[in-house]
Image 1 (spheres, rainbow, N blue to C red):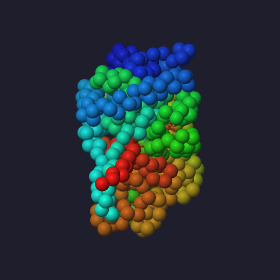
Image 2 (image 1 turned 90 degrees about the vertical axis):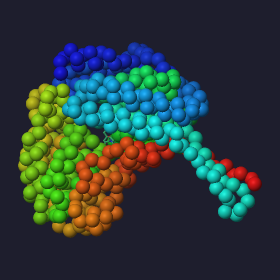
Image 3 (image 1 turned 180 degrees about the horizontal axis):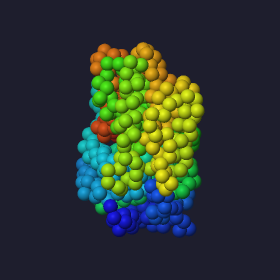
Image 4 (image 1 turned 120 degrees about the vertical axis):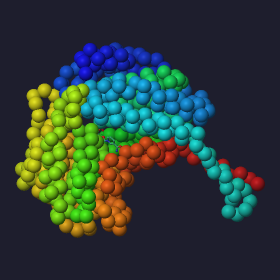
Length: 487
Ligand code: NAP
């Protein structure tokens, strides 16, 4: 990858706010810097929105709402299908931008672009399947009619870890359902979203349907939107503490909410599991996205009969992974997003080691430039290690043993989070018992990856509520109206 190619892809991205179909500067011309986490250097500056800019974005969304809701579903679907094609045509640019601003290896960034685009294809097909019900009143006289309507203007807030996919799985169903929106991407990774917005414009999305505000203070631009009764829904992907704050703010106008929050995924390996396969999948479940994923395996609970073998094989695999800048050939592990995140990972490892855990590989920062941390496997994890309870969000795999199925299920559920769990066993009855006993929104059965645009993604407990993707995804953007028909 040449420096010239990197410069040209960054230069080509519009850096303004996207409001009402226009690209414009922020009020007061303020800007914020976007950093390359592999070097700590500035890539470029983008507009830093004011609260008034955010209200202007909501003005545009509210102004476009009625005509967008009345636009034929097929037309809404065709636009989504058009962006799906454009994303695939521009996949190399989108992926490179994402690698530059977020750090993930280029091959993974390409994977995310393809995954993200699939949400648009999926929801292009769902746009024409919004239906209602017609039934006979049980008493015989009268009929019951239900119909679906778009909820109205939405605020979509996305995190930095999957800068495009976390956007498309909200934007896709919102467009399909006939909702307009204000999108607030994470300040660390705005470039991918800005390029995506320009592709949506190119695909013919009418002005005002999608508006993007980039800002250095998320709370300053979102607070006035929560105060404005024209906003009807918030879909948030991010950390649980921020999600809780937003729920309080949403109570003012009783907004519809979807909350995709933090995780603490248990990865259960039973004694009868295919160990080769469990290790292969563990590498994916742990190391995809440098471990900075809400569905990353956070703690490995392994039956005592195979735990040592599993841990040493996993350590061999993770220890052999190439760490480096995501644009370099063969790199499998990029930098963490910033120094704070790397320090948090280091603290969690130090805490576990201080309490008696053993480092099988890694356990240290890498290099003196950028925010790299070595892929790490820890064994002999004590019960009071903080990383069993907190989301690590980094390339660290703690391995703990269990002896009975009951113990494994209880350990898996011993968390305030409930997003996903992974289960490895060849025993069908055990698989069913364990799946039924887990307090989570998703299970990977002999699979380390569950994400799929055709499936309902989401959690329970403090991992949030609402589902993205699948047939359920569009329901988050629709409300049901019931009509009592006299007959
Ligand atoms: P975060 O700090 O909660 O930020 C997420 C988004 O919320 C960013 O756009 C952020 O803006 C914005 N934000 C922060 N404070 C806000 C406030 N007071 N009002 C309005 N918006 C606010 O989370 P993160 O560190 O970016 O992302 C990591 C978290 O996301 C992890 O916990 C991960 O598990 C979770 N996640 C969940 C899923 C899922 O589907 N369940 C998927 C991916 C990630 P700024 O960038 O300006 O701070």
